[in-house]
Structure formats: C-alpha cells, structure tokens
Length: 481
Image (tube, rainbow, N blue to C red):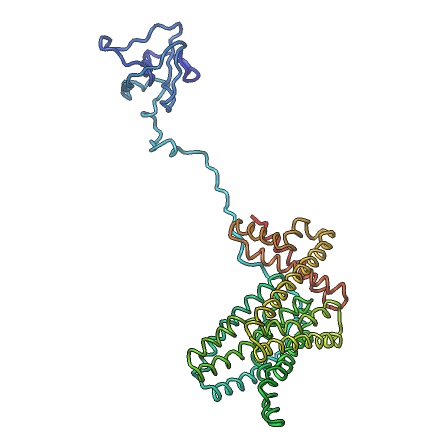
C-alpha cells in the first residue's frame, strides 16, 4: 500500500505509469532481477515518491529497516512522463532552489521596527526660575574682586609660585567638592547656585578678609600671630563666608529647602575659601622652604584637613537651613545664621588653637577626627530625614493617583533608586537618563509640595503643575516600546 497521500484521479491512457521509485530504506535490487516488477495488487495505482525528507519512510508491519546503502532511484526521461498526471520535481516547470529554506513563501510584510526612545524628552514646561537664582550683579562684583586677587597674588607671591600653588590647591578642592556632591545627590542644587557658593568663598570671602586685615594693620598696627590665628581669623573669615550662605538664602529662598541644603551651601563656600587660602600657603612654602616645606604643607592642609573650612561654615548653613524648613522670615533666618556663626567661629578657633597651643597631631586624632566623624553621622541622619519627607510628600500624590505605591518606593528610597536605574539600563536604548530625570523631577515635586504646605512659596502651584506634566511624560517615555 502507498503511504504518500491520496491517489491521483485515474484517466484512460494507453500508457502505463512507470513503477514507483524504490523507497530510500528499501533493500537494493538483486543482480538476478534486471528489471523490477511490482507484485500484483488488487487495484494497481500509481504511488508518488516519498516526501523530500529521506530520514523517514513508513515501513510495512513486521518489516525491519534495511541497513544496506541506499541505491539511486531509476531515472526516466521527460517523454515518459509526458502523458502522466504526476510530474516529478526534477521535471516540473518551477525554478529550482538551492535548499528548502529558499522556497518561496506567501508574502508577509515585515513588522516595522520600533524606534529606540530619544535621548531626551520633548520641550516640557520647566519650574519657575524666579527665586532660585542669584542676581547677575553679584557675579559682576565677584568678577571685580577676582581681578584684585589676581593682581595681589602676582605682585606678592610671583606668577610661578602662584601657579604652583593653584595647581596643588585643586586637589583638596576636588576632594571636598565630590564629598559635598555625594551629600547633594538626593536633591541636587541648581548649578548656578553651586558655582556662586564656590566663587563667593574663593573670591569674595578671601578678598574681604584681606581688606579687613589691611585695614586693621593700618589702624591698629601689627598684631601677635597668636591673636591673628585664634581670634581674628576665625571671626573675620567665618563672618564673610557666612554672609555668602545668607545671600543664597536671601535671593534664592525657593532653592533653600532645609538643613541639608544649608550644609551643602556652607560646605561649598568653605571649600572655595580653602582653595584660595591654600594657593597662598603653598606658594609661600615654596618660596621660603622649597620643595620639602611645600610637601609638608600640602600633606597638612591638602590631605589631613581638606574638610576643615567646609565643616566650619556648614554649621552656619545648617542653622539657616533649619530656619528655612520652618518657614522663617528673612529676619528669623538672619538670627539663626548668627547662632550658627558662633558655632563656626568656636570650631574654627579650636582648630587653629590646636596648632598654636598644643600638639597638633595629638589634638587632631583625639578631637578633630571624632568631630569629623560626628559631622558625617549628622549628615547621614539629615539625609534619612530628607528621604522620609520625600516619601511622605510623594505618598500624597500617590493617594491622588499620580504615582503607584511601587513608584514611590523606587523614587523615595536609595535602594529603590538603585533598582530603578538598573531596570532602566536594561531597556532598549539605555534609558537611564530618563530615569534620572524621573527621579529628579519627582524629588523636586516633593520639595515643592513641602513649600506649598508651609505657605512660603507663592509660585508653588505653577511649579507643581509643570513637574506633574514632566513626570507623566518621563514615565511614558520610560515605558514606550
């Protein structure tokens, strides 16, 4: 019996179709039978050849597959098949193809490839910049003072020593800057305010301190080094540095949300002041003692105490930030700043006194290092409180349907942000920039909500509307395929 499919219709023809091809796994013909004669069948009919796949051929019941090599199928001419209803593949009029994979298939248009998300978002509303920046006139004052400082260093220290001091002073500045940015990662401050804080400390605070020193020399005369180091320097330096922090609170109150912001601005002002002061100390050491004395000064100021000035002024910023969180007026913020200034002066005087009245290294490891560790612990506690407040405020938007509970966990916890960034990195096109925008706008939204609740921001409604639009657009871009 044939197993190749339905029988073709029988048509009367004087020609008898040729016998079926030998199955691939059948035994080869015997030499004594030169011509193959099929056994008589009750209903002789043509059986087509087996399917193209030679690995399978049905066997009669009880038969064993042959293990001998397959013999080629007998060849027939095209004329022999002229009157047959069956046309073998080799005589068909269809073109030949190299393989089964090259066979034509019904046409199906290819699915359009989904484009990767754009690197950024389209134009979206931005929060109002009013009350979040510094007047351009203050930058003009800084530029004028910078020219005076350049002239002072060129004349008093010389260009070569000043350049060497400048290059070496960049190292402790970089250490402090990256440390402060780690604190500020939760809710980054505006770049313009960050630049102003560093510039105020490096230019204005140093320049005004030098002017006061010259004025006191003209009026009073020379003072003892002990008095200058323990009394004059802490009071005058911390006063001008604290003024920079208070100016940020005065002109950019909408970017001064709490104690963490105050610590960041105070530390940046202190880092800028230490940068310019280090230029002077390094240049003087090079002039007076050469490379040996310069190396000692660099280790003492650049490696052992790069955070000293940042830690002093951050106390002033912390006090102003606490007042800002309680919706303090300008006068209340100024009073709080004075209290923080007292703490900064005391800490600064203690630091300088350790080098004048006692063994510096003994006091450094027994007092200054524990103070610095306490400072770090306090910063960590402030950041946890800020994260808690962010989660509470965003939870209010989640209750109104703007976010899901899972998104709140992702946006308001350090672990959630890490998981969110890893998830965005696995999406097509690496959508981590979009995730950063989502986190940044959501955190800013929580701060706007806090200012709206305290009633100290009349523009909070406009900022809230803009940030809600931005967060929805960013979420849609993150989930787009």
